[in-house]
Length: 223
Image (cartoon, rainbow, N blue to C red; front, side, top):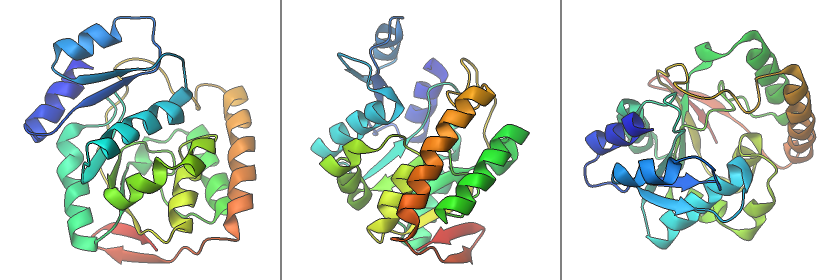
């Protein structure tokens, strides 16, 4: 985590680094605070999306114009953030996904194919949490209707596309996790449960969104 926080400060010395602590029992709060991050300690575990939404709500209260979300396990590289910012500036997108399709195991690639087929969202890296949101996207994601999302991958994209936001996917480099394992792709049992939820959600949202693909300087654009 320390390397991630220091990397973020190098990219934007004036930016605010927020660490959401999802009721952890380790020293996350102390370590993050010692690195100069703003720590949001949650009283109870809300899960991946609940914790993410808490961070987005903090950003909305502070009237942040843009918000980058990334994991603290070292997989997402702060040095790649300028690629996301450039893609948003060049395309006028509301959301930019930092995609790394080559990182996927056979299990992950199988899940991606199923999710793309059912949801109609043809992003190459559907489960990447490395994303850049503008204020319009943040306002949607902190709303009450977004609180009922079961997971943050297809659910978030479906909600944003339903509101006619432009989503851009740009290729970035990622590193292997420095700590921990995937919350989804660590076993077939977890994948099956996740896929059942995601496929049902994707099928229910498919009829209310239109996805058009185009190419813009290496980025895949979803309108």
